[in-house]
Length: 443
Image (tube, rainbow, N blue to C red; front, side, top):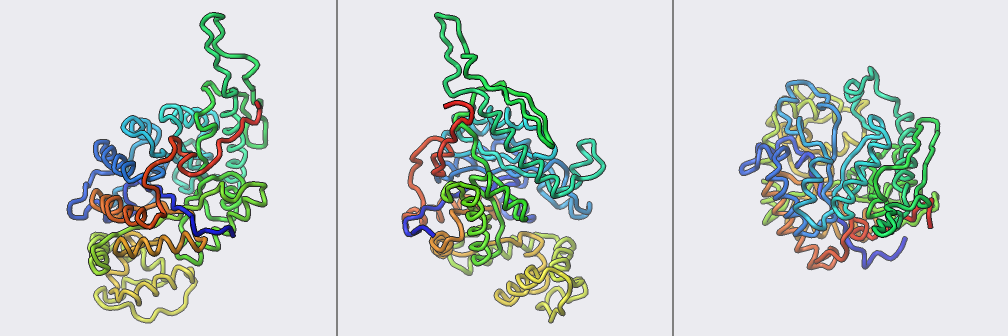
């Protein structure tokens, strides 16, 4: 591994939904409609840009989440803006921060995706990123004329070809194709237009794209799958990887695996950035931060929460006294990793069954909870030990949780010299230290 003593963190903000915690909209002082309020979202992205974040990252769903109505009625993720519409609007109130949108290779066509991202890249002067997903929610199929969701391996096979087609379409025009010579009357040089004429196993697309080559050459490619096909797709194509390791050791393994696949594919390992999701709760003391987390978790409805805990430990947890510690749990067929993680949290923090269930039902992924200094210590350790290149920050509640990250944590990272004080470039590629791709059809 390369020497990482001078490594710098990259930070993106996971902003759709504005918090992944199911109790976030109920937190005291939080905006219950934050996920669907343009005024609030404009304020959030301006704060993130002032804090010099690399990008504002939007996940997306093509169906209402597949969950029981009793759980659905408590979820703040039911509705959200369509990503391109929102990010185009937000591009007009910002100048530097990247704009990352999720778009599906299963339920869209390459020409649509290529055109939308090229448009966003031009509108934002080179700040667009495409998060490639194959769509995991089987309910989405029913919104696109299908009774059944496409098989996992078939989705990834289509995604790989889809990437080749989209990037080929982005290369339809040479960078200098549009001469716009008023005197001669020549607007575009026909020698600098490429017709793709792609015909593959999954896709058939003629081209060329009817928009100039993107400002960045190609918008930045983000990938979010952690299955073996997902890791392989990331190694071959991704420039940023959004992932969800549970701890530093599993993060190191994932980091080494994906970087290794990139090198095997003939790529530079520094041209793929691994950015795990990290839920951040900043307090004035460790106790203060933990109390904020407990308050937030307490806003998750118990009926939903206990179902999540039962799945995680492979035992019906509803039979336990909710206000006592978790009793001895026998081995089951549940995921041993998931079960061990739950039991570890219960023991370390002394949580009751109720508190543990609400933790599981609120947000059960990687979390850094503590003072700005303590969280910065953890982030620096992950960076220097080769577990990540930065983080995708998940906010606990908004606006205060976002303010705590921007006004307390970021200055501490800057003080240590591991996060930028100013943007050095203009495009998202420049923020991430990524090269501008060469046009495959033109010198």
